Length: 148
Image (cartoon, rainbow, N blue to C red; front, side, top):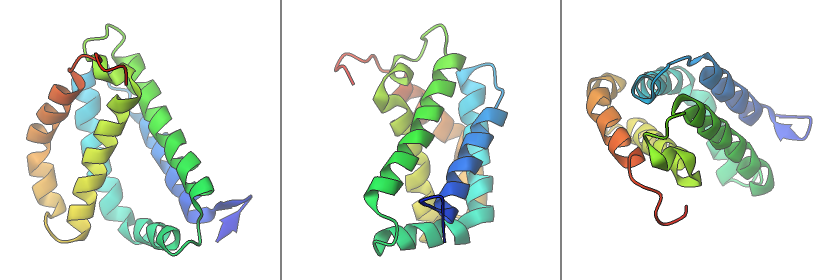
């Protein structure tokens, strides 16, 4: 399962994530977030078995934190970079902090876990996307007064 020192499943998840971000050519944060959410639902639904396998190997210690953490950081940092480029006018201050991308990722990951647990179907998440987008935009519009 390992290739070049990184778990092959984790490597594929990271590559897919970065590729999806690069393909998101939205010109506004509103469009970017909406596309990101819909893309996330689609990807997670199509790849849940691989995601569950990687997370299972991580929880069993087969993928250590020194491998998993940096991979996750690369994904979040790439997201932060894309968000910052789209928000060149700084209309959403939290985007330009470390916390901004993490807020978006935590929302998506939390909802994917709830999908995995049977709380939501992907159809329900797709229907909730406009409301979720507004929630994310509200969170990202907060001023970075705490210096995150």
